[in-house]
Length: 409
Image (cartoon, helix red, strand yellow):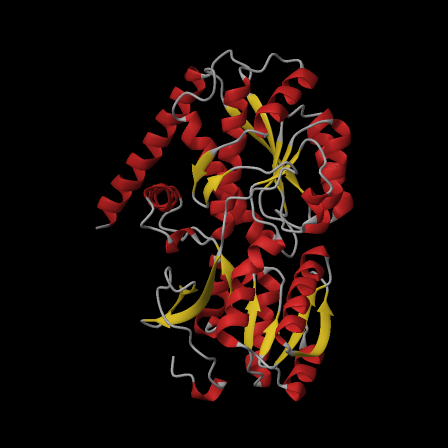
């Protein structure tokens, strides 16, 4: 048995070496086409940055394995923003001036990408944001700035419709990341609460990197809101759920992407049950052949790993960038001219990827992608995302959260 495993591993290693050697010959003598990609690859949101990197790498490897673009290899230059706006600006300046990338993709935190978009617009270098959802990024109509993800109003529309038409809560509370990401979501959900006559019992906040939420959760436990809106990243969301269990706090949590990553489920297991939000989780749309093909390739490349929303969004983001470079024509080496050409064709993007059709409005915002409302439910002892709204896409019925001592999984 050990010998068979050894032989299998040996063959895999040799195949990798052959691919690498062939690749080096394939692109020998040709200058690579450089693309920048930014994200939080270290720090409190590195889990999500890692998922983004996997999705982007899959896209690049897919194109390079077919000969690249114009017979040239696509080379990704990674930029670690560390979840900090100032670091993000420093990183993109390096990518633009020292690394001489043609275009920059990626981007996770809204606060970081608001600052980064200003820098890219000034330098007239295309920025295509993958994940960050603050409307401010594209609402200013900056030239050279695009986003392949829905913005927060687009992202939260489905959840707002579900709350208004189905759940109809009387009381709500807010526990939000103190950032553009969290504050934008809070404004949207606050407007919804006013519209449906739900009383807001509390507006509480936390910082990126916080680890102790007992003060906020203790206040919420006394108030007992039916709905707790909570928008933040994976690590904080996981800690919030663990501490809610410890304190016995029960509410219907509604968030966004941070609740639904592979890392979140690994950290929590069944403790993740009942969390809700909106998602473009690829594994929930396998009836779409484009999505099914992406999931198959992702699982093959990453040894059966589950492709989460950030992996799918980053894959789409990189594919949009590659498509634009291809349509702009082979880069001439004159950066100002090449970046201008890529910016021009980005405006007319029309490509179908894992999130659906990708097209931009006049501000550079994608306006053809519509997330669905999901809930984490326990199936055969494991957490699984289930679409619960809209009804025509639903894979199961909504489950009201049970008290912690009544959960039998």
